Image (cartoon, one colour):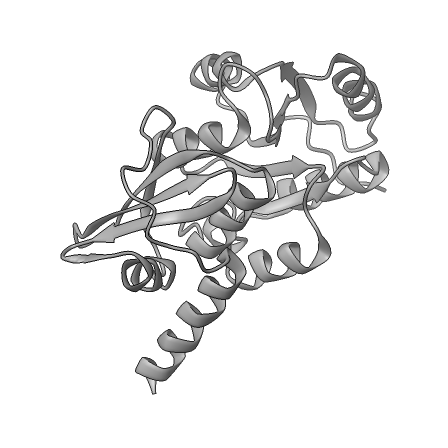
Length: 235
């Protein structure tokens, strides 16, 4: 017999009406018994989160008003106990594996396998530990997050703050990292430092645009070098 989760609430955030209705129809017939509600963008979802405090959120990335990445960061700051799954049509198996290994954001590939989604939700709701164990909000991996920005071709400034107060920034143009600053460092040297940080608070600024373009190396190459330098310094 399947475990009942009748006391649990799941929020689905998806702007495509047909996809949203399909997910809701499937999950509302789930044998696991959890309740389901929905929102069509991150801004509406945030209002529902503040009012209803769902146990788990499944959100698309690309949406109007507030996208899934911004919603994730808002939840991380205000509701760190809530588990969070992102879904995207632009993810790949390699990124998912790397993200999970680093304790980063978990995401599902679109088009969704609704039976798989149902099972994943039930599995997560069964876990007693806080989401830090599974890597859903606490200690978001910066490499995993910036790879999502890259896949989604985002243009924005990512403000990054370590627990010790050290601050830096990463500027993206259509998904490519074009400038980085931390302390007196800038460009690739700053990018290597920030990409190796184990934990940080992230804030998205979509209005800012990079004043300088100091990085030409591809993001995957930057991440690989940052990890190599981190391993080298850790020896």
